[in-house]
Image (cartoon, rainbow, N blue to C red):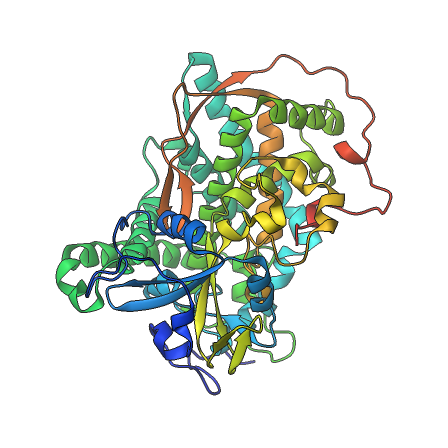
Length: 512
C-alpha cells in the first residue's frame, strides 16, 4: 500500500485570482454599480467588515447577475435560480477555489474544503471518509452528541435558575466544537468548563477573519498594510497545527482504538480501490478542515434558528408540541427519533434558507461554454453564487421571500420548486461531506432545547450579522426559562413526525 503524494495530477487551470476580464468576453453586458472610483473600484457605500451584506444590497438593485470591482479585481456574482441551476451542471462546471477559500490554503492546504480539483488527495480522502457519514456511523455518534448536549443544558439550567441570559453563538460554538472533537477525534477541549473560548477557537476565528480581510486589501499593499495581522495569522495557524499534531500523536500512541471515528479512518484505512493512504501532512489538513468547518457552520445555523424561534412564539410552540408528541417522556431520544422531528427540521431549513452560514460558493467553467444560453464563459472563468440571495429569489420563493416561514419546506412545497434553489451546503461532488452529520446534530439540539426551555429574546435586540467567511448572529443573547412538564403526547401523524405515506425519512430531504 502507498501513501498519496501532495503533487497535483493532470492538466490544471491557472491558480490564483483570475479577473473576470480574462474569462467573460461579454463582461460589458453584465450590470455593475453606477459609481466606480478609479483604482479602488466599486467601493462607494461598501464596508470591508460586511462584504457579503454589501453584495446582497447590490444584488437587490442590479438583478440576478452582476459584477463588482475592488482594488483592481473584477468578479461576477450570480443568484438567479435559472443561472444557478445551470452552474450546477457538473459536466460543464466545477468548484472554484478562490477568494476567501484560497486564502485558507496556508492553513488547510489540500483538505476537503480547500483542495483544488486536480489535487489527488481530495478524491482519496473523500472515498476513505465517506463511510464515516453513513447511517451506521451516524447512529454511533448519536450518544456522544447527547453527552455534549447535556453539558450545554447544564450550563443553561444554571443561567435559567439565576435569571441570566445566555450567549447563544458562544454556547453553540462550544457545543459544536466539542461534538466534532468527540465524535471525530476522541478529544475533549473542555469548552464548557472554560470562562473564555478555547484557544483553538480564538485561533480559528483569527484565521477566518484574516482570510476575509485579505479580500478587502489591494494585493500589492497587503504585505505593508497587514504586516501585524499577518504575524498574528501565522501564530494562529501555528497554534492550530500544534493542537492537531498533539491530537494525532496521542492517537498514534494509543493503538487499538480502531477506525470507528474520522481520525481512525484517516490513520488506518486505505482507499478501497487504490490501496493509498493519506499522508501525515494531509491527515493534519483534514483534521483542521473538520474541526473548523465541522463546528463553525453548524454553530451559526443553530444560532440563527434559535433567534428565529425566540422571535416567532407560534412557530416555537408548534415545534415544541411536535417534540413532546414524537419523543414523549423519554429522557434520551434515540437516533431514529431525531429524523421524525419534521417540523423542527423545517425550522432549521428555513433558518438556513435566510442565513446559510456558508453564504457563497464559487463555480468555474470546465471548458468554454455559455451560461444559461446568454453569457459566454471561457475555460476557467468563475463566478460566485450568493446563496442568501438565491434563497430569496422571489420567482421561486414568492414576494414574501424575506419572511421566516418553516412551512416553505412542507413536502408538497418542496416538490413544487425547481431543483437547485436550496443550496446551504454547496453543490455537486464538492458539496459538504458532513451535511447529514450537521443536520442530525442541529435537529437533535433544537429538539432538546425546545423541550426543556421557553426562549425569551432580549428586549430591543435587532439581528445583526457578523461576517468571517461564515456568518453568525452578532451579540445574540436569549433568556432560557425552564418549562413545566409537557402534556401527555398524542399520536404522531405525517405532519408532526410520524411516517408519511411514502415512508420518506425527513432528515434526508432537501429543498432542491
